[in-house]
View 1 (cartoon, rainbow, N blue to C red):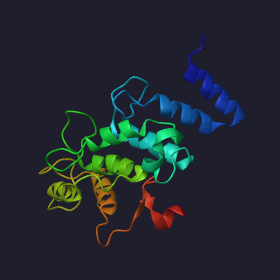
View 2: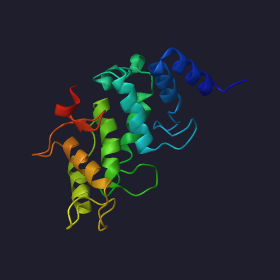
View 3: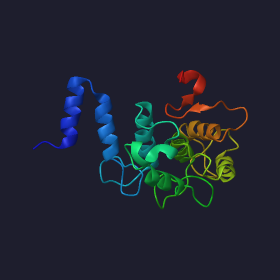
View 4: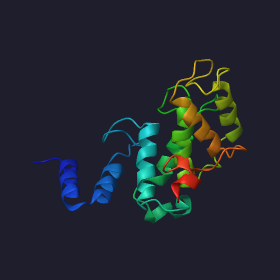
Length: 187
């Protein structure tokens, strides 16, 4: 017997039903703790959680104001996802991508965006996150992954995106589902 993910993927490609496959896949990737893993049953990860939630939002399976409507209308366990996401903010103010890992600049965007999509971006400590991000800013410009490290090409982008989520003056608002400014997304 073929695994259900393989069958759904084949049918979706043949019929052009990518939304059905993506919804099915995303919903089955939600882990016992509320986040999403890369494969069913795997450890929840901030990046995978963002990808699943943003995809479901873009396809209309997660609606605006989902926190007030989660009881019967959501395809995922929103209370568990909210709890998992909020638990990713650590004592240093940053966000971790997985349990028992250090805070990292990019997860300020990945996990912060999940909270924004859910309408829960006012539940975490924005001042602490801002202080963490500033501690990752380097004297050479840009942001590093961790405080007191050299910058790379990846983390400055997500550092600026995280500042946008914090409504930092001078930084344009984001369409978090696409990771672009609202102006460029057309949404």
